[in-house]
Length: 288
Image 1 (tube, rainbow, N blue to C red):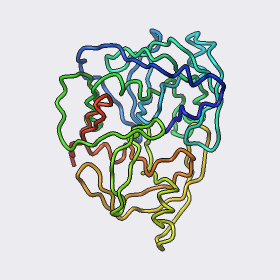
Image 2 (image 1 turned 180 degrees about the vertical axis):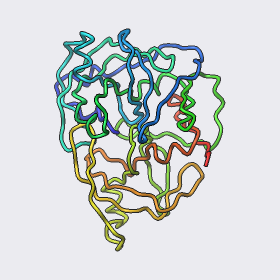
Image 3 (image 1 turned 90 degrees about the vertical axis):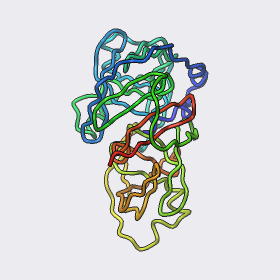
Image 4 (image 1 turned 45 degrees about the horizontal axis):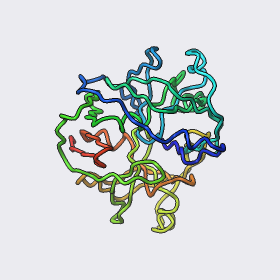
């Protein structure tokens, strides 16, 4: 799920986002993850209140639901307009000084976004989403993530296994190299994507993917900003982390911030994952 903080339109709001620094933390014990319908959930504590957070490496900052923030007495901040992967922009408040603890890491990000997450919760069949933990967590430490075993661990002593993929930032989201039907591409590394692989409309048009005679369909999609309709197709091959996958369901992402592609949990759960955003690296260890 892409949450584009560069799309903040309110005057002066972007300046609040500079200067992130995660706190120094020792190696942590493993924290339990829960993967439900290819959505990843992790325990979190926000200003001392335990809750469950949706983990989303494609979100450029941590997001609190408006009702949850109100229950915690988190108010004020600066008004902003933000864009996600939905059909439109949405209104947010940018609030400083909120403490978030996840996976044994205390994150003191200068700003969180407070947004109504009720629509997203409905579309992923949840009663509510209190918190969406974004790249603040990934920026804070090296992480070992095992989606099948349901655990995440933070610490500098983690030894990666598998294939190293360099991270390349595009519009504030980290991307990894893949190949789509033989054509190289940069794909958002997006643990918030619980649906199909997404193909940016620009990439699809350049490679004539919608005009090669294969069957197309339309399904509901979207993210922050509301629902959309997406054209779907099947990718003949997709190469990721030294492995080739065949007949991969995909959908066309027409949002203006779309990368070449977006790789989510459906493929990433087949790998053990180590992330080190500071070292510009992700390692994928194929598990079958």
